[in-house]
Length: 160
Figure 1: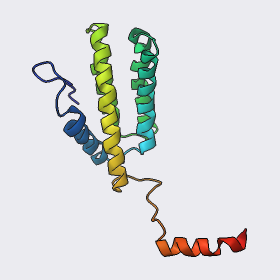
Figure 2 (figure 1 turned 180 degrees about the horizontal axis):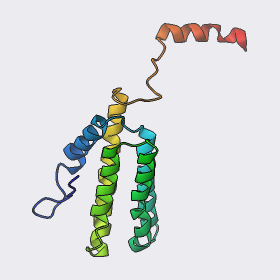
Figure 3 (figure 1 turned 180 degrees about the vertical axis):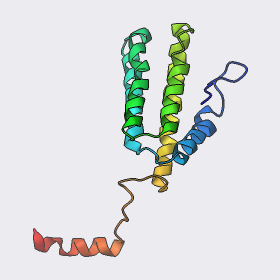
Figure 4 (figure 1 turned 90 degrees about the horizontal axis):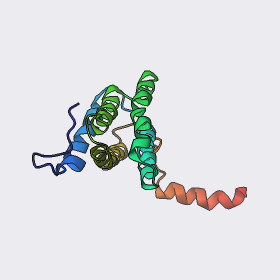
């Protein structure tokens, strides 16, 4: 997966958080059994935890080894079949891009902040697709009709 957050002028791509994030979600959903949202959320929560540690005063250099450890976590999740290859590749490629050891630490931190927003967009598009029924969800049960709700409320007082 080719990763580049910047256009030719060195600015963040205008389409990164929209079309490119949506394209990633399309690829994840098309690759066999798509991961459940909670699995994607686990990785996103790890990323947000790192972001919060930086905002709390910890240096990017201090979290760098732990950020790179996400690749080990994707390996385990893939072996357990809770994520698919495309999602693993998404995380691994972005971690490699962000933590390119040939870059100055300031550039890595800049890329990390962009990755946080990019990943947020991917999670949002994924959640939107889940709500459309494109992925399995615990929310996919049909809701009772208004009359069913009324009837159950009408007779609830008898069983209290």
